Length: 569
Image (cartoon, rainbow, N blue to C red; front, side):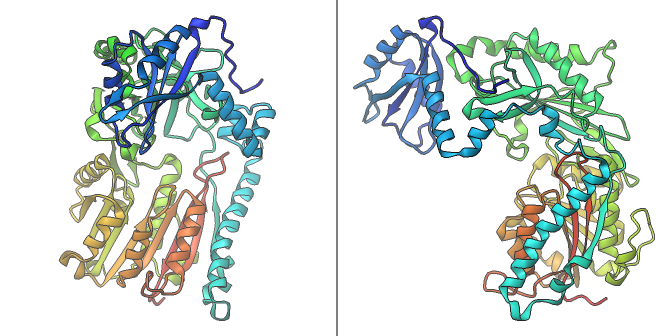
């Protein structure tokens, strides 16, 4: 089965032509280009309009040879502002895609290999280690983690070979092993499904495979994926049934503007609540062809609630959200674009005897069964003396405080809904969390209230901008000890954040939690390298680190490391 999408043109009127229009203003909004085209009395519908960001050009595609000639004659020589426009590079959309594909294959051997290989099953893509016995999976991940951190150790060694720190020599002995997952299948509490049409033209709510821009693309059902729960799979299938009767049709997500973007399902393990979050594209109606459908949205929202929230539906859906999104990242979505269609707009989860509220855009660990293990390890790394850490008991609630409580501040960076910081609040005088997603900060504040935790505060903003202000505040200056926890996204810590942590001498203990060992390794080098003008004060030293298999059957693994400086055992 070939992943290349082939559309043979049988009717010339259906041929889609692509035009480049220039010169345009570099910062011209797409809507202004559309408005200008509508003033030209073209008497045709645009199939697709786009403006290249920060470039003096835009693209328009239309259907039909007759329209092609009329379009060229109307645009060439027309005046837009103080610019005289011209049309160039006329070609069919299929010719354009084929040209891009051939160029990519010529310049990238990997693309050629993908083209010639039979497509992988969705299980091979989502859970590539599934064929290995679980013990072998753990061995594979342990080796991978060690190899990545070895690169960091070598960079430190090469920085000054004659005077390498003592920990560098002993680094291998600092690893305390990989902790297996309590549950190896059906463990994900959050799943994001792409909404599109598959290669047969049928609606599919599943996972994408391949490279969309080169037509090496398909979308597959998640049925084979052992890490996905039965509830999530059922909801995905049922939403496809709903979409088949929708007045707003599903498009090929990688070729045409699509109103329906993705479906996110979140489940709480201990309270059994379920959230559906349906992401839609608000720019869909910028296309003149879709304007008449705008009035149908309200009706579709009511149909969604009726479909999933009736007494006959076998699952108990707690809340349904509709989110307007033009971004691939939840942190870039504005809260104003989040609408509650049904329920309270959040779900709750219970971890380590605390209750946590989780909003649709908030981060929460995707494997609840390993979350308590991670939190238990972090608790020990915060509270125990360094010479006691070889006896870390993940289930122990008997802590051996290293610092005096009234002199200790806990900084929880990239704190999400505040789970880690709030679970440790009883051991320190004050917890300060910093998080970029506004809804997550509101969740963290609400979680503190729900659990009657009064010694915490949360700040909304970029960590790299907010941290310096916090560290220079009078409230923080009184503390003789600062323990810092970082749990960054896969992209790792920004350079400014690392510099701010290095600069604050009172941060003597740092716990780094990461789901991306590569970016963690890169960050560790700058946290542990010798002082420079940019990275001042004493470097941190690794003391102990763990791997936790929070993602069985995948290549991913969670890593927790303790780093200290100027601290005596």
